[in-house]
Image (tube, rainbow, N blue to C red; front, side, top):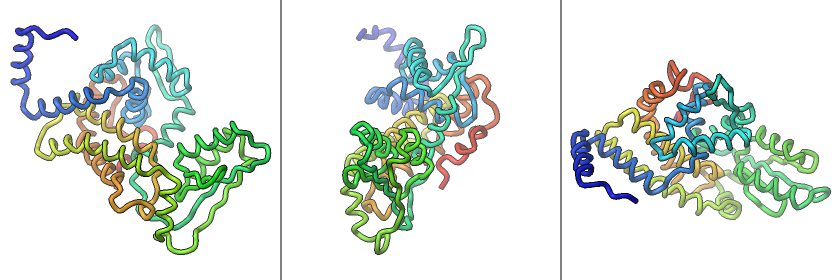
Amino acid sequence: MCAMNPSAAAAAGEAEARIPRTAASVAGWIRRCLREEQPRSKSLIVTILGDSIVPCGSAIWLGDLIGLLEPFGVNERLARTSTSRLAEEGWIEARRDGRRSRYALTPSGTARFEHAFQRIYAPPLEHWDGMWTQVVLLREDTGAQDRADLRRELQWEGYGLLAPGIFLHPAANLPALEEILDRLELRGRAVVLQGRAAGSPDAPNAAALADQCWALDACAQEYRRFLTRFEPLLRLLDAGEALSPADAFVAQTLLIHAFRRVSLHDPRLPAPMLPSDWPGHAAYRVCRELYRRTEAATWRHLTARVSGLAGSPGLGLAVFQHRFEA
């Protein structure tokens, strides 16, 4: 690493001294956040598309995307490589206009984003009617690869493993389950059952079953890490610290990027099945409050930096119009 020469260091110090204390404080939090954990470029692009571009129903010029990635330390070469890989994986597709490329979601990419929305922006499940969904994979005509594929997909969807080949969830998304079974060609080799356990949904055995079927301790630890990282930013804003549009965009992107990572691994169990001090609820409240504080300034930054955005956020796909509603 090259050291800054004394005259340059002095100039930088004078420049920072001229910045209002509020902006310097928020900028300092952003610098620390990026220094402690640099987001991976491809995953960061998914976050930016999902939170900033897709809700407007928009495509984005590659040059504009490169500009949005710059504050996160992603250079042009890495941005181009990561975008190409997302296209190869079927998330996005390029629309050529002369020598320029404009990227938009593919139909399958749109479906994945809409599904992920429910796992990121929707509030925790406070109530439960006691209904369970159980998936039983029949042993006949199912090989080891079939079982492994189904286990991976259902655990990503939040299902717990009750016994080999038996999965359950207390708040299942049935259309998503049907899509998984169809895609894996297991519709005729799996039985889907629904029913209620005897007793109240608040019965202690429901919480005991949650401990048995889901790795809640690991998920709770990730939520606590999230709170440790983002509660200081909320305290800054509570104390009256200001956000420039550029800093608001970076802060909001880091916020959703981090919350997406933990929430997509959360089985999203109903509150009666969770410990009373479950940190996921506090993490959601912090994320929602910070998002509300940054959304307007972020939109000003996006409309200034991304061609073709106009109006207000959330006017594109209807599913994105209700982010973090109580």
